[in-house]
Length: 239
Image (cartoon, rainbow, N blue to C red):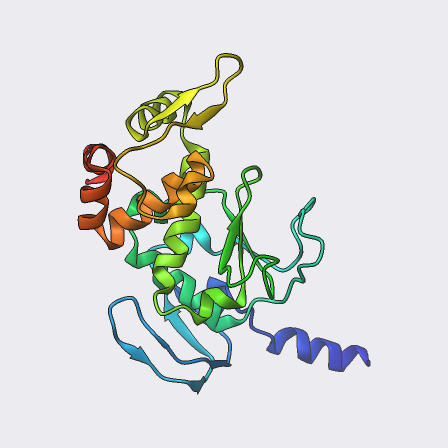
């Protein structure tokens, strides 16, 4: 490549997510194909080719713009899973979905989001690592009829991980979790009222993520099944 041609490429290039190419409060979105989907508010977004343009920053943009990573997380245990590169429309869709979620989820900081093709678990849209503030989203997530709900569940895992010992103890007590006699680990006692989703029996973290998901999207069911947890969330997160 000649030096002159290289310079022309360098000065004609616009980064996909940088305010340098646009005015304050907006970012450059490069030309891309946008897959059709149904937005969180029920609006149908068409499948189309989108021209490069400046877009006003979503509320969540400042927190999340650097969170999308193209690689496999270091030490990722699922060796058969393959990473793929983020598409422009996928990142924009996540930022849009974040703006639809309560601030106690959308304002989480330090979370890294990776894009992988397919989970080792059948029909799994996303996985959250207990350590490392990591969320992995798969193709299944973007096929979901309610993407915001999928995202809320994975963010709820990160929210639980971020709780300090006082808040975690308070929630665990309400949820029916008890500490083992030695160490600082918890286990779930049998909850006679049941669980909003059966996989909540697997772990306290999974139960918490399910409960937050239902608190946002099906609060009546959460209130019916686990009223104590519902009331705790009302006191803690309603604002």
